[in-house]
Length: 405
Ligand code: ASP
Ligand code: MG
Image 1 (spheres, rainbow, N blue to C red):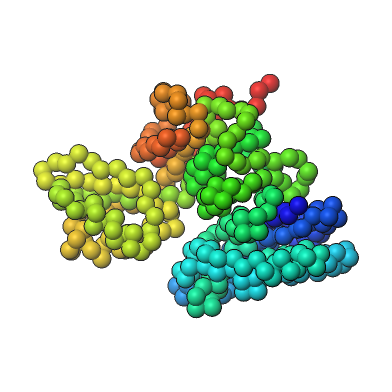
Image 2 (cartoon, rainbow, N blue to C red):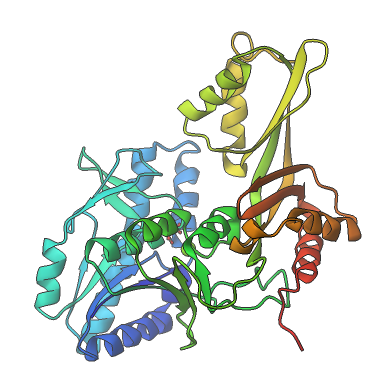
């Protein structure tokens, strides 16, 4: 059996944790399995490096940021190889260059394009545990790139797909996927299974457990994915195409505080205005999420939309550059104190009234809804950041998702 295991930053944060992971990998290896291990940078190392970069230059060149960040994962794999060596287990660490793992050229948010499996296969054949840096790749200029924050999950799934692994295990500091973030909703319950589609919505909605591109890739290549804790041996949550148990109306409630709303007031009410506005943002790779357009009045209209909070300044700057020409408007307002609260569930498709039930739960606790968006299996509302906790608990209770008794 070939197993890909991925351990996040908290799982390799210090010497003790590194040895904990090393022993788990050793156990797998001693069963006679081929073991490929993907690691993140230790603890908050990526944040530390980013802070260092900004101390030197508040606006560091993206290429150099990636050059810097890729060192974090290299430290992890090298130390892990040393830990395994001290336990008498043959292991080898490889970075993106050595594999090699090729990506698109955009620094900071590159996509994996091609993974060579030859070197890895040779190492496995020599009965070594292969430790691979997560989150990084090499572009066509032979420069290091990174896959976006949390990208090590995607590295692991991509490797599992390329190597036709039997399973891809994502180890983290929680026991699996929950009906809601247990830090916010005390009654949250661990799910034993969840579908790729539900997980995709939960991941991109800020459940924060898996990088959303990793789930996209797992779905595309049918990679069997398990999310489980590195700190205990509990079974975790299986992510797959269809679930066989627990098909509930709603699977989970997610929140995403990394959201800001931009309102563009007093745009001209004529064809092409929305196109131009969003095209400017798209050309700078700014992802727009919920969009709301007002009913026109006196030849003008308003368009509001949400973007990730860390991109809001750039988005506003882009729009301001075009205010004299293609984005004529009266005002551009920004609200950073908003958050998305979403319910997700494949069971929604065949059950009307789910959205209404969510709105009722919010009304019961006096939470005001600023924007709404829906898909087949999801309802998202934008609320004030200060009411997230109240909103999530109310919704979680309303759908009776919690542990009973
Ligand atoms: N170390 C990177 C980050 O902190 C990648 C990862 O952990 O997945 O975002
Ligand atoms: Mg992560």
